[in-house]
Length: 116
Length: 109
Image (tube, rainbow over the protein chains, first blue to last red):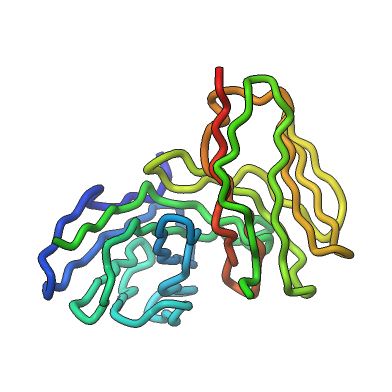
């Protein structure tokens, strides 16, 4: 089955620690995205990548970093510089063709990060 | 001002009711408009999209865009308890999606 997987589902981190969230897709999509979701604020874009070895900052990139060494993988690191990292993190990919032109994105199941 | 605004609700309706969910947007250059449904603790999934102005129907769901007033609507007919979820409107801006904050819908049996 094609899709997007995120791991882990729940993650707990102590203040001051970096943590990496995994996102893998087998849909053969070039474009991938990371969003953060907080209650009452919808989805906010952290980083996106349109192709391997290239990525751009989104609206709230401070305190986060990404890499895109493989088409299938787009890991997100939440660094200790992120002041309020507790949130629900969603990874998405965008298909080519008409669906991609429209803007459709396929989302993973999310990772809930809690900083203790 | 946010580019896409949405009433967070919650909206509570009895089973069988017609539900109206709404968003407004500020950027007149937006042309593609989407509705995503998100169940609790899950990733969003695309319900419908529309291009420019007009209506689009898919089963019990109708999406409507009025570009003159910058208004986006989603209507759900014969609502079911399984429709209980958060509904997010979104518009495409270049390679990104701009999301509303989401409206939480509860359909009571």
